[in-house]
Image (tube, rainbow, N blue to C red; front, top):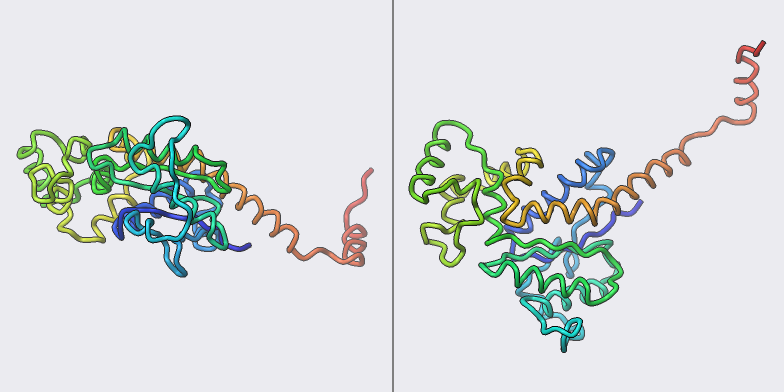
Amino acid sequence: MAARLVGMVVEGPDDARTVPALVDRVLENAVPALTGQLARVRTFCGLDAGATSVTWSTVHQRRVPRRHGHFGGKPALEDARTAVLALRCFVARDPQPKAVVLVRDSDGKEAERRQGLEQARQDSPWPFEVLLGIAHPMRECWVLAGFVPKGKQEEASLAALRKELGFDPTARSHELDASSKTAKKSPKRVLECLTGDEHEREARCWTEPDLGHLRQRGRDNGLAAFLSEVEARLVPVFADAALKDDADAELDAPQPSAQEGDDTSARSPGRS
C-alpha cells in the first residue's frame, strides 16, 4: 500500500522535528499494529518535492487564490487567511495528503490564533482532515513539558531555574514569556539551560515520557489539546490503514491447492 501523506505547516525546522514525532507517538499508542510500520504507511510532506513541511512565512509566496472577506459573517482573526491559503495549496498538491497539520506558536495571542485557525478549518469542506496545534507561547514549552531531569547536574539546573523564576518551568511552561529570547522567562533560554541546546537531549523530552505525562504537563500550553486533535482526527485515518494492511496480507497469503485441501481433509479425523 502506498504511504499516506500528511501535510505539515510549521514555524521552522525545530517544529518540523518535534511535531512529527509527537504525531507518531499518538498513532502508535492508539494503533499498536502501526508500531515499527509508520515509515512505510505514513509520509510527512510540504508543498515542494521532497519537503517534509512548509513554513508559515513562505505560504504567501504560493500562487493560489487569496481568501478575502469575512468568515461566517465575522472578520478574519489571527492567521485565518494564511491558514486558508496553506490549505488551498495542499488541495492543489498532486497527490493530495490525507490530512494537514497546522501548528503555530501563540506568541502571547493564544485565543486569537486558535480561533483564526478554526475559522480556516471551517471555511470549506476540505478534502482531507485538518488538525490544529497552538504552542503556547511557543514550541519550546511543549518540549519543556516533557523534560524530566536525569542525574544530579540536570536536577541542579532545574532547581536553580525554579528559584530564579519562582515556579517550575517544566510544570508551568505556559507562564513563560516569548517576547525576548534573552529574557529571564524566555522559553528558549530556559530550555537551553536545561538541555545545553543539544538536539538529542531535546528529543528525549518528547520520546521518553509517557503520553499521560505530556498531556498533564501540556494541559495549559496547548500540547494536550494537540495530542487530542491527533487522536480524534488522524488516528481513524491510520487505523483504517492498519485494517487494510491486515486484509491485504490475508488475501496475499498462499492458499492451499484443491489437491492439498483434499489431502488435508483425508488426514483429518472423522467425526463420530
